[in-house]
Length: 90
Image (cartoon, rainbow, N blue to C red; front, top):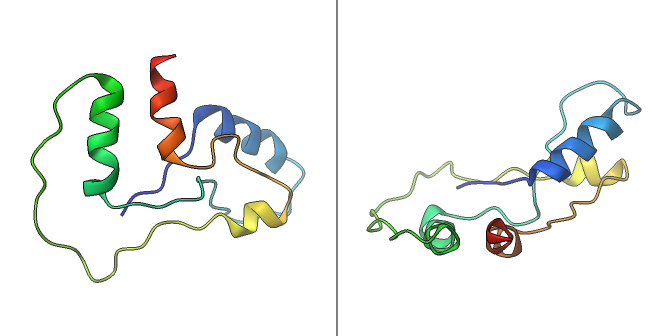
């Protein structure tokens, strides 16, 4: 399971975090996803063939949650990898 963040969103969060209370905060998009979902989309965005999917899943898999960052006012400009990956080509 993977969680993503666009570099612009990460930079904005880093600047915002200067005014947040201390402690760790997840800064990720709103849609954690399994590689079998996002990898073909990334390959398409990059214009390369997608690898063959592998079977299996770890029982502990889960993506990161950005609720603490959101409670502090941060909102991702790219809320999902589904729109962020296609933006790689311009």
